[in-house]
Image 1 (tube, one colour):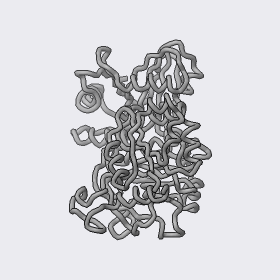
Image 2 (cartoon, one colour; image 1 turned 90 degrees about the vertical axis):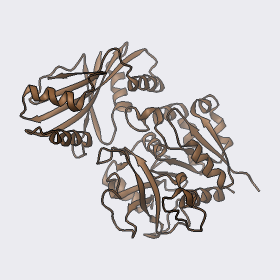
Image 3 (cartoon, chains in turn orange, green; image 1 turned 30 degrees about the horizontal axis):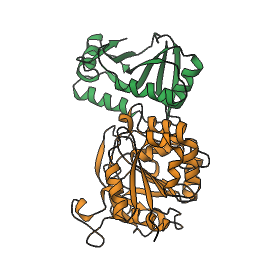
Image 4 (cartoon, one colour; image 1 turned 180 degrees about the vertical axis):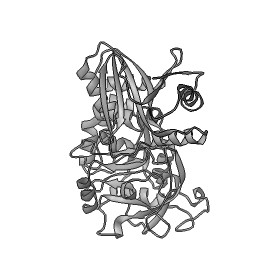
Length: 261
Length: 151
């Protein structure tokens, strides 16, 4: 059987790369942490991999704005390769700081356009928000979402968030309508019952409680919560699990490894 | 030398400004109605205004929620409201400026530039200069490593 290879992109200030690597490895993928400078030196190396992951952290110290410096570096030095990789249909994920990078370089919500048309701004609280939240999976709300990462999830899951800038804002109402119409909104913050939450379950006051989006094809996915921090039941404060061993994050990573196989 | 000021666009929340106003109320100072927060950058070197505008547009401001203003020299316009400006002291490493110098090179501008980063707080309301100094010292500037100006 084919060995699925995942590239975990490292840069100064990224600190969730090991956990992301471990998440893929638990799902039987071969995951390698590759520094952005190494990838810039050998740009075509990216095509040796099946999956590209932008992990969480504080790239370049969150200087200027979260993800901005890394987004600028990648777009200007690796942009054409990243765009080609994404448009080929190979899976790409951006988690937390990685999501900020994808949005700020314009890979989400439309990798074809590859221009910034939405942003992830400061939490309304102006504080770093760190807690477990509930997420409504949009796949059953309307039509089945195209997102290849989030198949087989129930209506509401729980994952941890940890960010100071997580408020998703589209450039205008038209884009918001398109994201809704195309089923690109993958996760919304919710209550345990799937209803609209208030702070602190809504950690940042994101527009329409958006916590994660994908492109129309469903292979490029970004989210503020950390699925790599809920692979095992042991990582949950109450040791909750859907099968006695694993957490919801495992399903997200397993989905995409199975997709590549 | 150029100064780039970043402002929150109308219709978007200025979380930092609201937070600072709340902190000012918490230390018992009354008389202020609103605070507008504005990060600013002083860029020096053999660089022209159109390059600075590109840096401001691509790096320093968020395309969706912020707008920017580029001024040649350092901004000294008189405002109706009081402003507190906070900058690092000369002997202190400005780590954001180091990231910014790298990011400017990534943008394709290879000229040598020096950058200083700072924060401006526009205070709307009536408070005395003594109170403004108190706000700066108690809340906005760490005077061990930062200096401030009340304008």
